[in-house]
Length: 271
DNA sequence: ATGGGCACCTGGCTGC
DNA sequence: TGCAGCCAGGTGCCCA
Image 1 (cartoon, chains in turn purple, red, orange):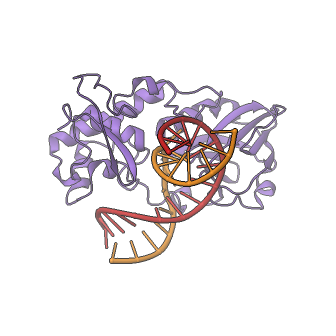
Image 2 (image 1 turned 90 degrees about the vertical axis):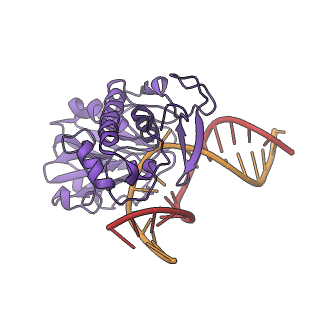
């Protein structure tokens, strides 16, 4: 599901309501996420104050007094802010009950999401220690892409989705970024010129930033903290547009498979 | 190191 | 209506 824009939209959606609040109680209804929720987490969290809400890659970081929660939304997860009395629905796996009377409620049909706790250095955490740069940060630019792609035989689409190269770019935004950069997804990463690397870096940044501006992309399950979908789907140029005319040149969009995932591109606009 | 494929899981849709 | 098969915003892990 959620790629970087959806996680960032969720972060912004809960930040104000959550910062400075105390956790009254963690209520777990199903511990079976991608990794089981630790059995002592209820004890650990009770009474802790939330200091801030951050994000690294596609992980939401809920910083507390004595450590941090590391939450991943997986493919189908969403986190909503609700009055805690609102009845639960199917796949509502846990609630973080706050002293405001509101709840952060996690719903995830496929259970690929995860919830971890750490009281150590976040950068050293197993899930975060080897992740690449943030795509919207200054250290992600054409120079970086060009350097990182030297000698890499993988297809560009897979290269972009590799979290060691850059984080946050998933299946939708990888296709969309390559479209905007006018580069074919099947080319080897090593074939990128310096000029193309510049275009690609700019494309990744602008696609992600535009998506964040409208609350992300909702295909099926995703909703923001307010329960509303994201509207970037209407602005997709290639994703899920197999055989439909390219919005720019009218040539039919093509769908191919790369690394067992669907890729979409315009055979005429992208070289 | 690099690349490729699998696994985890539920639900929605298609076609017979 | 039922059911099999395929597909879906991710990513850690195992193998060559």
